[in-house]
Length: 124
View 1 (tube, rainbow, N blue to C red):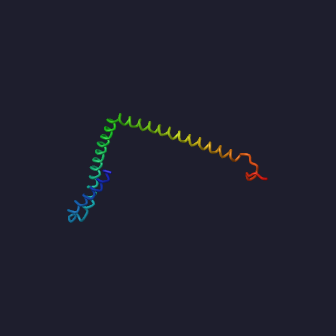
View 2: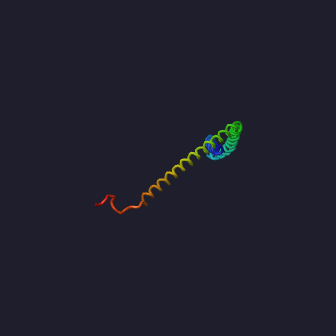
View 3: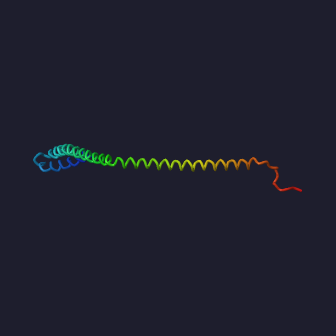
């Protein structure tokens, strides 16, 4: 990202500087200035981007390293909570399975009950 910004910014700035002597160089100083500015911007942008990345990466690494015990404890607590939640879900699932088995057995017993074939009322 730093190199891209450097090339674009340097190219624009180089072209702008190249317009000053354009009358004397018949306009050839504009693309030459853009090329020189773009090359310079590429080098500077790459250097600045790499340095910024190294410093921020080092700072982030140091921050994580200095808080590694807190991070480890937080991760352990999260794992415990996840395990507890899994146990709760397993218990509810088992209760649901038991309920469905009981309901199926009750429906089966109603369907398989012997009947007389009539409407259930006594006839004279």
